[in-house]
Length: 230
Image (cartoon, rainbow, N blue to C red; front, side, top):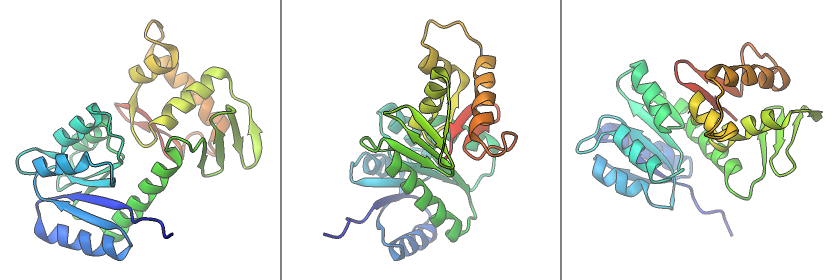
């Protein structure tokens, strides 16, 4: 049987943009549904049949950041790509902090957006429950065996280094603050500082990145925290 089409929800009130997105996404083989305001967009994004949401920030009734916040608070893990006409850094940081996987500023290249959609769907597929090996560039992470390889060679990590890496992988694409990482990896009673996280990230980058000063996977989101990019 052929694999069912991935369904993409576009939440956008600009008719010309929705038309262009629908035509191009359908040409790529996706099933596309459209919502033109925040209320219907929020309802549509809750559907388990939706594989990815393209979400405008400026919407009637409920804005995109509020939709994002509600979905993540409800435990929805569907990948979300934000669109906004505003290039303000604050919007981008807030969107990533609330749990968006990616952010594109209007006007945007359709080719770039399609490439990002494909990347997010691919990343989501390797992060699904039951898929216990994560591949990122030259890295291969066997979650069950707690083993890491790079270019086919084993990389020795301490238990805490692996726990930190796993913490970021489990939220792949989403930025985590240093405080969130500290609670998840060391526990709520630990008295470490944000600098503890920074030191461990330096160690991980030295072991896993080709160029630790310009990492490809263990990324810093300035002023917020860290995220893993497959």
